[in-house]
Image 1 (tube, rainbow, N blue to C red):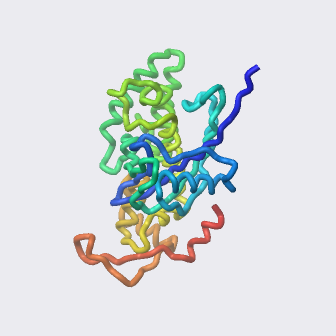
Image 2: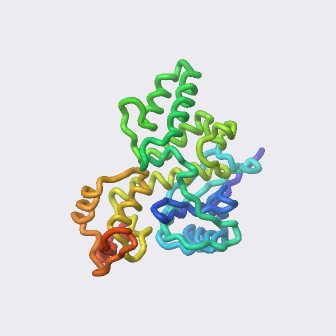
Image 3: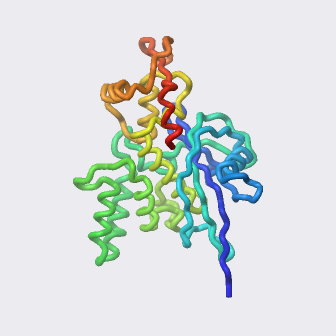
Length: 291
């Protein structure tokens, strides 16, 4: 009789917005997310994760929240008849150089998910993806209609509008259809940069969580410098959502929520007239105690 066993692994999705681009901290030359086993010496899951991040990347971590626990039996990193249970966390940081032992590097997250960036319009790569998915759907006549409905809903085809929050659903369909390298599809038609095991799936989960969360909690300010222009704030939100926002509507929303206040300073780095600098209102930080 063989008795299976489980390993607990801690994985970090560390996100920063730098130069108007969303970036994720990686190790192994961009192939993996910072991670390590939960050990008996770790006081808590979160403290264990912080230790691994420090060792592998040398990057400080501030805001951190538990993301999801991955324990599917068919995950790629099962070993020796056991199962690896991955407990993932989402961290929001301001990018600094990293010099840890894991070969750390920051990479734009749209290099892993190029179909998710709509800031310049519908990504060209989507045409190829949808064509491959249509072929996949037709391979099973009994499930063709159901598959096509899922594709249309997830990828905004036909009369269905694009929903930026469905990052994980889109990746899951691509995996199911064998259209990502992690599922064994030929590299020459694999969309996006692949990652080790199911780390790209975990990254997709983190992106989806953050895209949804910025709509109802001001976590974006964890990614902003101490002072910023309203345009910089808008560009950061657009970078995370992968969408462009109406300038006046965005500013009206910020004013209505009373989230920022003027610092009294201006900056000429925008290239035009000096722009007012703002900071996040400290009184608004009450949300942190509710997370």
